[in-house]
Picture (cartoon, rainbow, N blue to C red):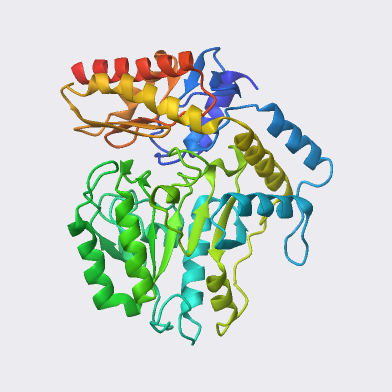
Length: 438
């Protein structure tokens, strides 16, 4: 297709995420991608600092993942999961069981991160619909537990109930607030990761559960790192205290590890920073190495048993592409590739390099703070960025960085080389300086 025709079709008929169809932003056609590089159709080559929204942990066009996809597609690309099963699903389940805490052992495969969150929320409500005492505490489970608690500045996806536990004020879904289920929102913990924990942070949750636990099915959190809600890193001690309170009040604990899973924070899963095992965990993004959409909601035994004892013992959810064989095969290959690599050292080295480079912006006027955790580097500005202005500046600098709000951040693939990472960081620093000066 001629490049001009491609652009015409895109501009006139294709809707891009978080944009206006009548006033679309600048769009850059891509011809192919390999390693950590995105090759634009006009011949330019960009170092990808976003891992395509945090999922291409091995980079692009990975031989091992290509091979897994080719082998599986010759057998079957898809078959319904209702009444059938297949080897790719069983193999992936076995690999996940080997990575996760042993208590998390009941796996529900879903389509995307948002759907994994929807599934987790449905599990929590159906669990509490059982007319028996909760196995996780002495508190009685009751059908009236249909609400959720969460902390502000969180993000859990764009589907309906997932939106209801995103920040209702500062999040991106304020327009739908009056139509969404009303949930309980707690203050964002002030205790940052790596700093001393302030016990006052947990008091709002303690008060909420004392007064409203009979209404609350679960507390849902992004452990350690809040992603699209603000790229904020908070203390593991908050998770430990929250887990204790949830257990005391018979409230389930859900961890949304869609963005943090598979090594992004320096641990395989962010929960390892706190040594807390939730009742339900959601994973996605890096699960298939960015090759295709797949997620999983994984529950502890007592959750599955509770659901099975509810008035409707079958769990009522079944995506058309649930446990898609092609996605499962690639996901298993991605996990194998990750485990065979020195990923911990790579993530550590990325963190050290990012901190060194990005810290040079610390005293720059207009920069609020710098923070780094694992393979996540964040430059927080005082004001929201002008995307139409800053995006071309990054492209001209030879990198793909897509800020949001007042956050300029990078989450590169783990396979990025020292030289590539230096060029990525230097471009970020240079563009931010230039942007803030003009």
